[in-house]
Image (cartoon, rainbow, N blue to C red):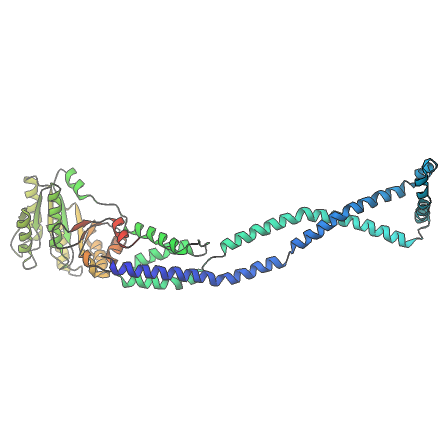
Length: 433
């Protein structure tokens, strides 16, 4: 089971993963050009070095400041000159030169070179203040740019919606070839799109894709389970189950397998041969009843199928039998007369459960049949036959999600024991998930 689907799904997922990674790599150069533009504009490390140099020069400029204050306080220094020692007296004759230039600059303002020098010195002072402001601001700008670069490096690995559509095509094709319904493919596509498109991609892209695919398939296969044994034990009246589907799907054999399933769990069963239309249908069900040792209620061919169902239920109520299984004639949804007969059986018998029986190997045809029957009689669940020879496995993956009803059992062989309860975990395991 699922042999071909498992292989093709693995191949398609690996190809999809590789192409997704390649698409990401192709987009990187564009993002790197953006990074280069960011790096070229500031050139902040060089500014730092200049600032450091200016910092080292600051003490020299700071030493010049007291010189200026000395120039402003030169009048009191003239009084202190006689008290200076010989070494300081030697320095005194140099100061009057500065005093003359100082007074000339104050009163005469003729010595332009010294004025220009002082103006330059004064002009340099605000520059030092500007550099201090830069020293405070520049590290913040650099921090922002650093984290910005980290953020962009993490968010650059993206694929666009258009690229995703192109990459998903091969995976979609593999699913279609294995009879997976369009509704399920669209669900898988939407979930993968949410995780991959316009979002930062993880380092392990294949792992992310497999995890998303597993979550989607789990959701698709997980519907509220119907416990037939619990319902039969809890119910005071007999549990009535009606089966229907098209001809040749293995409906009668599935009913016999289910009768054996109830017997194995110590629940009594009666069979109703409501297929009075197909030749040899009554004999086929009677043979199974004899082998299993269960009671069968039958009428002649051409009799009212609803009457057979009514008699079987009355017999079960009288004899305290827990389960009644109604075998109806195979029919297409387009056969108006047979569909009206089915509606009459349901109206008279009022079954607790209505179960569709379909062949797993027919794939999308089986899914379409289930949809049509569900529209007419509103089925409660499904049994898929010949699942053991279904290499594609599209029907088990699709039918529940399409009709929004659970799969109850899978027919896995010809023996009565070959009826497997449907388990989403086992299906995922078989698919290699």
